Amino acid sequence: MARHFGTKTFLLALMLSHAGIGNAEPYPFQQSTKGDIITEEEALIVTTLKEVANAESQFSKTKDAASILRFYTQDYAGIKDGKSETLKDQAKYLTQVLEQINSDEPIGISTRFTNIKPGVAGSFGWATYEYEHKVWRSGGKTDALQEVSRGQCTAIFRKQADSWLIRHEHCSSTSPTPF
Image 1 (cartoon, rainbow, N blue to C red):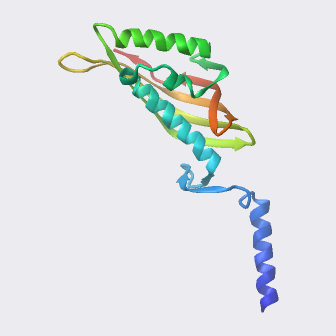
Image 2: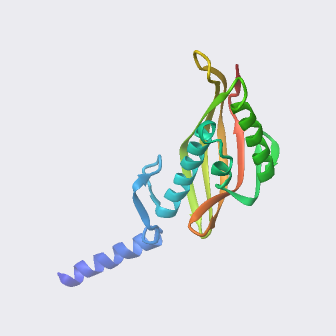
Image 3: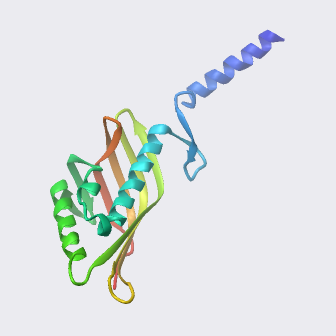
């Protein structure tokens, strides 16, 4: 009887390790949309993306471009709606946004990432996700929605120290609706 139990245990362990489950280092509190448990490193990528969205949403209050740029590698190269961009382009864009925030007609920003599907291989990671970016005029009697942009992205990450930084991002708008 004990020998039979040991054989079953061995076969179960062999099947799990062959399927990659034994090496997955699951992070039990996070699940993908398929119901699969994601690893701790994949959960850190999800956290990084949520922190990026939060930093962008808080930009009109913090007015700190570094709070957003800190999530990108120094050699970042991305594509937004078919146009190439670098970290310098991101910084220039944030300077323009800050000028608008500080103007007589300030704006507010809301960014949200959903349906995040991460993956990791060593010190490289990736994620696909959907985004929603809203800009509105603020400071008047009522806030007026100025622009809503939705789309899909694929991001490539590089692990540096204990952080996952965005090395490349390719985003395409699916429904830009300027007001």
